[in-house]
Amino acid sequence: MVKIHNFGAGPAKLPEEVYEIIKDELTNFGGTGISLLETSHRSQTYLKLNTEVQDVVRRLLNVPSNYKILFLAGGGQGQFAAVPLNLISRTGTADYVVTGTWSEKAAKEAKKYGKVNLVLPTTDRHTGIPDVSTWKLDPNASYVHICTNETVHGVEFDFIPDTKGVPLVADMSSNFMSKKIDVSKFGVIYGGAQKNIGTAGVALVIVREDLLNQALPICPSIFDWTITAKNDSILNTPPMFAIYIMGRVLEWIERKGGLDKMAEMATKKSSLVYKMIEESNGFYYAPVAKNSRSKMNIPFRIGSSEGNDVLEKEFLKGAEARGLIQLKGHRMVGGIRASTYNAVTVEEVETLVSYMREFYQQHSK
Image 1 (cartoon, rainbow, N blue to C red):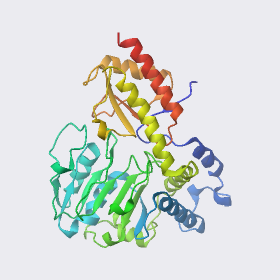
Image 2: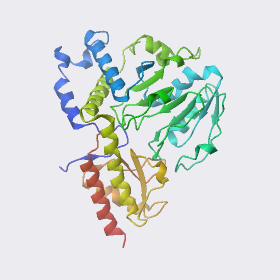
Image 3: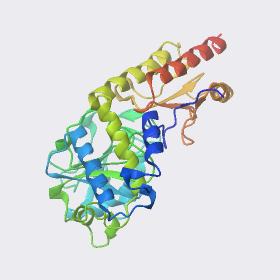
């Protein structure tokens, strides 16, 4: 069997070291003689783990003391509802910066709970982030929402927008822990774990304390950040195993050099792919503007800007035969997409680029 190189956008590859740890701990967690899967969430064993995972999040991101770290079920999309349910009450309106599929879905969900102002003109094509001077921000907004990395379209923020004192809320599902960020610039940061920091089942939420105690009366208790914070993320049985895996992944990041090292590797890996695209004389086409290109999710077409269906199918077939899997673009946009999250190695990306070069040489004549 050929060696598998997983470039899936999520659920994504986990570090091989973490798999080894999970195997060792699966049936005997923390010396208890039983699995975490059958351990009480009220036990000292789990309470200790709950604290440890919060602590590694705080260390890696240098989270200020006036922020709460929460673990919630429902994934990133659950937080699409939780954000307005917890924050929109102040003025009844919120600003959404739509730069791709996920911020669009977040804005649509928020409309159920208040007025949504779309900061940017509506478009079907997302190929970059318009200059901030063109944004139509509402100074009366309860918050401004952005998605820092659009997994489908491959658009990533390389800056933190100035929202003039209005709390900034960021969906970081697909570039969480890939680089250092200044948490103090945000009111709320959230993301599903299954793309870059763990597996499906848990969302990580980092919320500034002054933004608590504002939930709408209709907010379900399970999505209420204030109630979750008061109960230390153990209001009910939390997604314990997903939290555990996230913790082991974050500890792996710490051992490997922290976020500075992750950022260095992200630049190196993405640059390899983008360099191949640039050197292909248009055979490979990256739709995103260079200043907004994602280091996590790299979409591209083959043959032209609209893609060549025959060539793209052949590319994917050849990739699968070489163990390069989950490269098919999202069904909404088609084409090819390589996701180069923290757990994807430089060597794996080099294998992909080698195949891209070989395919180009065979079919560009």
